[in-house]
Image (cartoon, rainbow, N blue to C red; front, top):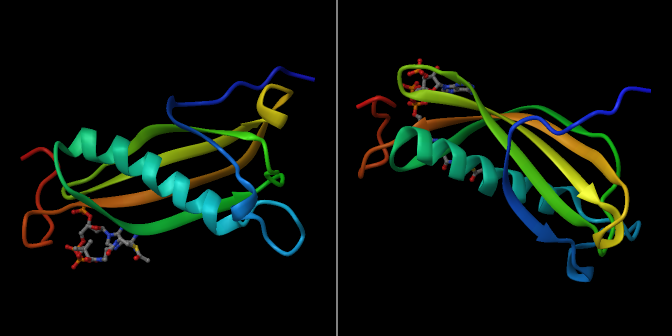
Length: 126
Ligand SMILES: CC(=O)SCCNC(=O)CCNC(=O)[C@H](O)C(C)(C)COP(=O)(O)OP(=O)(O)OC[C@H]1O[C@@H](n2cnc3c(N)ncnc32)[C@H](O)[C@@H]1OP(=O)(O)O
């Protein structure tokens, strides 16, 4: 079996806490999605040199559950730059129980729009 590595830059690391569990006792998918939005927003904001807003969440796949005590590691890369929008590919991996095996748990593509002070689209490259 090939040794699969994360794609992209490690942008955010955080610990899954008991307050974020769902009724199954695993971590709530919405919490994972919000961490991905934060991480991708950092990457998009850096590329667009300013404010960005999430306009679309595509190709979201929940591959494996996240559990309390896992370290969530989010990797991002810019996949496409348009006139006012940019797409960020995101992979979320965990280190099981803080230090164990590394597993990919989710992936997605988020689209951001560069916005000005009034919240209107502006060119990514000024
Ligand atoms: C659930 C939440 O609370 S998400 C929270 C954060 N997000 C928000 O609040 C954003 C709310 N949305 C908005 O304010 C507006 O949609 C804006 C300002 C982001 C964009 O305004 P729009 O009038 O849609 O802009 P417009 O039609 O000019 O499109 C802007 C760019 O986004 C792209 N775009 C718009 N909608 C989508 C979409 N669903 N998927 C992919 N790209 C899209 C367009 O193709 C265009 O890209 P380009 O300039 O690179 O060619």
